[in-house]
Length: 328
Image 1: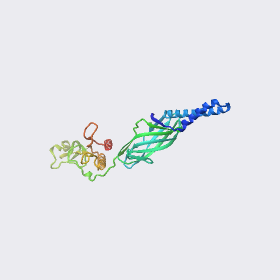
Image 2: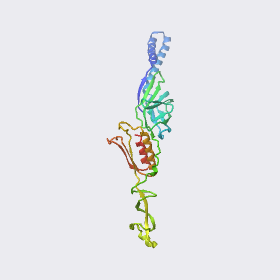
Image 3: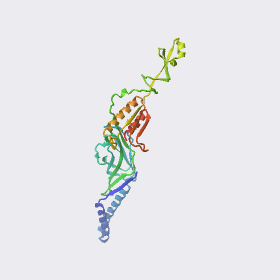
Image 4: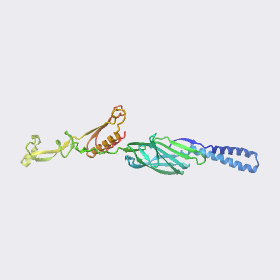
């Protein structure tokens, strides 16, 4: 995995290297017994400095950082967690390292902090990672509002174990990990009183309309029954007129027109969250009762159309698409 690195140097360690170089030069002009000790100290300091530079340049060569697959779809007020996996496949350990994760403030990390000006929530944690070791870090959170929280920034702060500097490593990769927070559902009263008025294909217990392609049986003829509904074969068999009985059918299809603009049309309406919660409730009701529906929202789409339109459909997959639409 690639990181964008920069090093926060400490001026103390280069001074040691300078002192070591001076001692090495001085060892050439003093007596034989003292020269061995000075040369040893100077070489030790120079080697230590070289190892520190090597660590800074190669600590991330075999370092990987991934998110594990855990469910992250919630409603407002739910709790959950994301789990990150850090693995060092090289020989350079990370001691007292710090991980910093930054996501959108749709959620709030527990034990983290919120940056209101940037609309972000951040989480940091210290950890140790030895060579050829894998570690999982679980980060709990609470959902705060409707929307999608994406990973905006990941940074590792690693102290140089051979010196006095720190290595800051910012991940260049854009992670697809996200937390989806659906709108809550607000009950809409008397929704069950909405009854169909036209002929359709939706089977119903009580309806003014019959589906002639779905006969379910016969009954005795009653005065007023249409002539074309008489079942002649059954009548001949029973010796009395029999009338065809068909499946009851109605047209049930809902269309939602959602206005999210204010009266001036320049900003989002103040009650937009309530409207979205009511739409979420009614579409859930439609899904449970197998009622097809479609939605129009007056916000611009990517193709310059001045509204977003979800085509008519039904079922749980269609409802899931609706919840994702309401996040925009």
